[in-house]
Image 1 (spheres, helix red, strand yellow):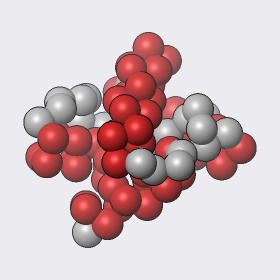
Image 2 (cartoon, helix red, strand yellow):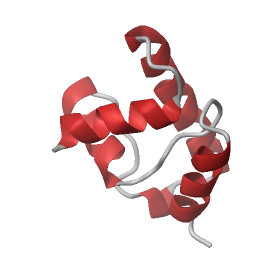
Image 3 (cartoon, one colour):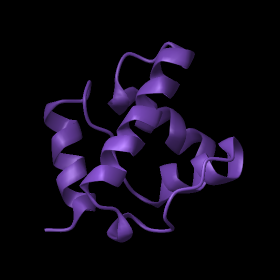
Length: 80
């Protein structure tokens, strides 16, 4: 099962620990925040995903978002 799907499931059950991983946040982090990640979620491994979750958690703390699910909604708004 691709990490993309696993991340979605993990975020659903533990949104305080795990972030969604798809093209939207990867694009926003790269284009708006200058944080470069691999171009697609398929190229991520477990270590990449752990680092990615740490970055999303920092965004949550900085913006006062309650969890990574809320961060995902925020990032989707920025993306669209």
